Amino acid sequence: MKKTANISLKILAAILLTTAVMKGWQLTTKPAKVTGGYEILEPQTWIAKPLPIIEHIDIGSQLKTGTWLILFYHYDCSDCLAAIRDYQRYAADLAGNDDFLKIAFIEVPPYGESIIKNSPNYAIGKLSNIKEWFITTPAVILLESSTVRNSWEEVAPDFDAVLNNIVMSKKSNPISKDSRKKVMPL
Image 1 (cartoon, rainbow, N blue to C red):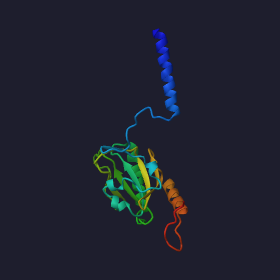
Image 2 (image 1 turned 90 degrees about the vertical axis):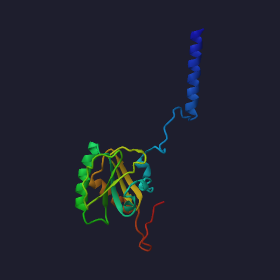
Image 3 (image 1 turned 45 degrees about the vertical axis):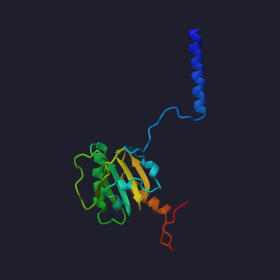
Image 4 (image 1 turned 90 degrees about the horizontal axis):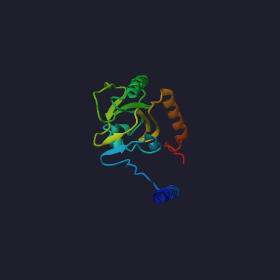
């Protein structure tokens, strides 16, 4: 009798599970992406939208105008260190062309010993430590007038990839000769 009851319970469980899946019920509780104590950052969801965390970056007001290549990094991330070295070279190559592209390095807390030296070729900032931020680093954002044009995570794009993105962005968002305002595609 116990064996029959066990089989009946397993069949009932299978039926309930199948019904739940067919109805699209969530069977597991996923943590919230944003709370007062932490936030999970997903840069790929920011494309074609204003940078949602700009108010939490100490140099956010500086990033609101112009075209920026922003590298988010953790001080103890070896891939981030390699990307920082590359991007410092890119910044040196771009010196004097601030109207084309500027580079910013944004440290994600917890902060460590400063690994970037001040330079007039790039900006250095920090993401606020008012909460825990979860982001896969290195994370790179191509920002134009506060709008995210592209994003990369885990691997920082090389300079050619960034330049191609800027060119494609300019082609898809041409400037009207009459109004001198950007014409955004529908």
